[in-house]
Length: 175
Image (cartoon, rainbow, N blue to C red; front, side, top):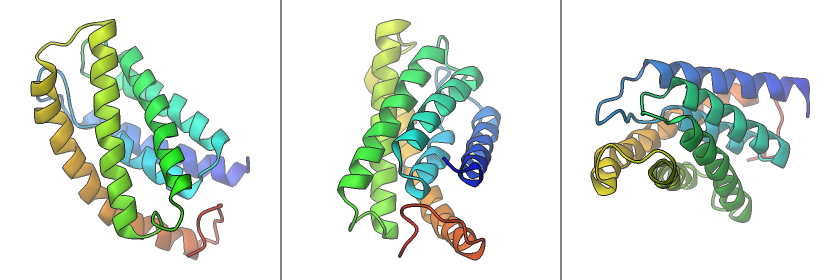
């Protein structure tokens, strides 16, 4: 793994961490997970197993440490790790579809729903939920899905422009 790739991954995780830390919990301790968007962007830019492993673990730990959800550390770690590899798997399986902004948006929506489902399920099994699953899913996960998708539609072209201008290379950045 190249040092410049690690630096970019760290910057993306750092930006996601700041947004995750400042967004307040608004429904029974749950909040939209802004770190997901940056994790997905990092996976799209650096789709290799080592990067995905690193991203899944670091975003899970940081999300868990900055969560407002009671007992949310371990559910966050489980959620980000699983979600990172699910998105990586789908992204690499659908190479022709995933380069377009529509493909990136669809993957972001799928990833956010996977993340929310895994988080709520693992939280239910580990610490219990502060409210009904369906209420938490519909009031936090679905709005977060819409927000993350729109945010990625804005962020991805900007990131690709920066990547091209700085001659940063990765496996996918060949349009």
